[in-house]
Length: 97
Ligand code: HEC
Image 1: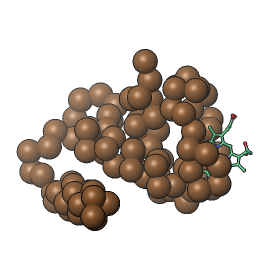
Image 2 (image 1 turned 90 degrees about the vertical axis):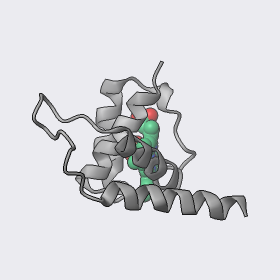
Image 3 (image 1 turned 30 degrees about the vertical axis):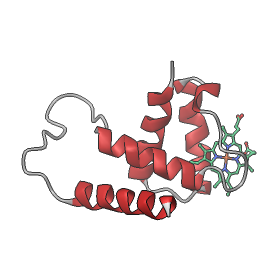
């Protein structure tokens, strides 16, 4: 039962984040950074996609530079879109420290 609620909650988050927000300040200031929702999605994608072929990696086991290279080789394996690649990366580096 718990699982169903978790899925429902996630679906709600997904739906909410797909709704265009007119007030979102996009790329106007500096390089694009992921929002909290995108990082939350990155976490879910990471948990669902990155533990299929091997144990789910520990985000703190590599530094942010190493993760760029790892994600470049793993994102195609996990069939991530460019956006998902970015979100998963942003989630991973957000876990650090
Ligand atoms: C289709 C299978 C597959 C998927 C999906 C996959 N990996 Fe991997 N991963 C591998 C294989 C095979 C290796 C070991 C060989 C290699 O490094 O290419 C590996 C190795 C790794 C390593 C160790 C690399 C190192 O240098 O120590 C990390 C970390 C990693 N994967 C992270 C991820 C992350 C993050 C994702 C999700 C975006 C992911 N993997 C999805 C197959 C996969």
